[in-house]
Length: 395
Figure 1 (cartoon, rainbow, N blue to C red):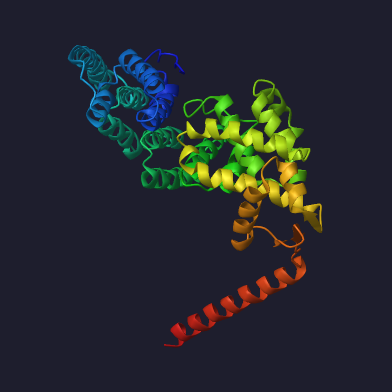
Figure 2: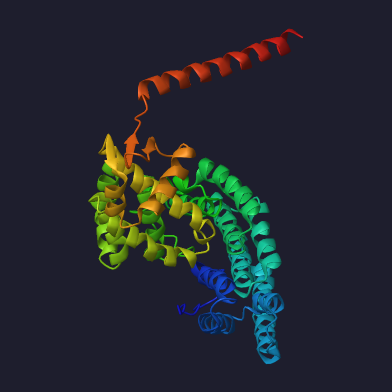
């Protein structure tokens, strides 16, 4: 089981809320009914994190949801620590209001927000961040950070609609005065949202653009970020782009030294070693199942990887024996037949199966003709819109 480092102080924004905890809760939820030993190990780690950081509000929700026996001593001790810390912060705020300026006041409100986020008191954390956003004297950087704080809470709870609206508000602020670092952070937050809503292409672009500049350790570790970047980009890049953006990228190379399974995934696809690639997908499936961003979309992702491999293989042939292709992928002819039939019928592969000749024949689309038809179609749609607008104006 993965154990997080304890949160060191209430002023350390990086870990609030603790995103590792949300990953552990996701894993526990998936395993609790199928693997009692493993789920119990995860539960122990969850309880350890909760106790270290006085996350009593999260504990009470989890105990209620999973019918855990409540440790009343843990609850009482955590609530006592929280009330003591809040008294300290309230006294500081009172003193600042009397003797100090706006910057110090914003600092203490921010610290309160972080502390509430640490213990899982979302309502009060968001209230503090909203107070900062509403203050006319708060600079755009501080307001952006407050929006990031709210977005982390929404991401922790997988509140997709709230994440979407908060990212829209943050984008407006950043466009009017965000610095380079905050712009890069926004890309990471947007990438996490894109993965949650299964927009793999958009998340791949955002993640790849942040490989050299990643600093959002409050969302995930660099190793986890690179896992997302590699998986999404292998799935969406062309073979030539894969070489340029991943295989020859110094940042990716340094990470892959510590991630041999990902290295094998990229290398086997690029080298057209499809048997190895299919084995890599089985390993990847195990990792994806445990991830709260990509796990819910595992069937879609695995399907897209197979489409990618099949279409890359078929690009090299006008026709190929079904049995030869099955051998190249290390699967049975009947399984390959079923897979190809499904993807061809769905319009995902430009091929047809000749059952009599045991052949797969590729049917290459005429790209120029397809583009011409697309332009005509879009032109007709635009003309219709203009005509409707003219009629509205004439009335």
